[in-house]
Length: 500
Image 1 (cartoon, rainbow, N blue to C red):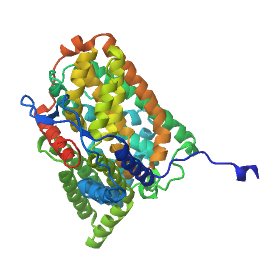
Image 2: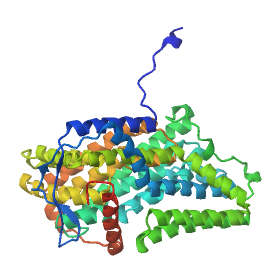
Image 3: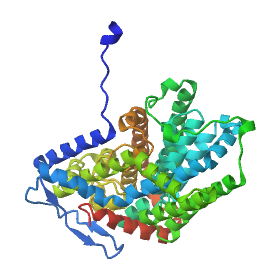
Image 4: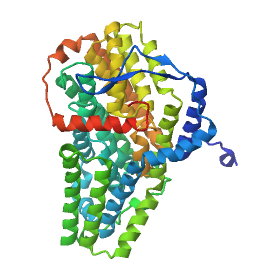
């Protein structure tokens, strides 16, 4: 009887419900937080549209009423339609590969080899993605790879969270520990009038330290799940669409067609990466690559037109929650824009940081940037909006501009794995991982990560690293092509935000 009356602990609602609750809270905030704006102008030196830090003015209150809140939701879905279709077409490609049997055969080959027991499998995957995120700013391309890594992790005896960590946490850690990421470091240092990619040595130290900590915590969780599947935070979630049939070694039939399909998978990823770096590919171009690749896979596998159509419909059905999550997350930003409260939040945080001293101000900047990333999840958009304010504030507080950029870099990057307005909601939606389950795993990880950020900021400030960083080597990693995409990213964000 006692077990029947035992009360359950508090549980967060499902991801769509959680996001709708945030939407309502933000709507209420538009009645409470004063409306205000900064003036913006084109910087003749960099060409970026930046904020005049001395121009903040209060404007007439623009509260968003309940009717306008609901109107903002379909508006948001239209605004992120390209991302929604990227998710669907990306899984259309993955599902076509899975239906061909190529992925099943390849993973069964892996499962029947010694590689399945290698303790280096997870850290190697995370390292590859981390380097991609840190150097050329990889992030969005991972959308299409999440189902593959979720399926792989489940087949290896882990769970979907481990699969998401192998790709998303890896690339997000690298993106946050940026070394030559033109979309964040490149834009921020240009606005702060620092040599582009200066301070490279210290940022590589940051990269390896944060990568090591993140990987260790993921592997610790993975080991627990493999030893006891009931330890998984998502043990009660249905991942049948990601599960692959396990075969014995003698039953694995890896045909020539399947090998060609796997080669086409690798070629698809290469095309997206090359197109992003050299050809200016963005969301729509990535979707086109996924569609073409899915059709090529279907042709090689011998699928009939009706089966191709069925695979496409299944992809839309399986990714429905992920697509809804993307739309609701963008609605939060649109409501804040319509309520004209984003600049007020930024101005208020900047005001709090005055008079705290060098180290205190640097830590306050770090905290502020983590919070601001909820409101401005675009890396380059945040740099153009925040750095013109933070750089002079840092000068007044005795914080070097390199440390100011470091605080921005940390705040913009690591909280991408935390805030529902950032990429984590999309990634969890694609991987069918409820946000409440993700937070159960990730909040302790983020706590350690944030404490480490504070230590790294304090070290940078206390040792007066501005001199060392400013004299660091300058290294360009496809800077010209990346920078142009970074600027385009800023203006894409401005179409649905308060930052032109």
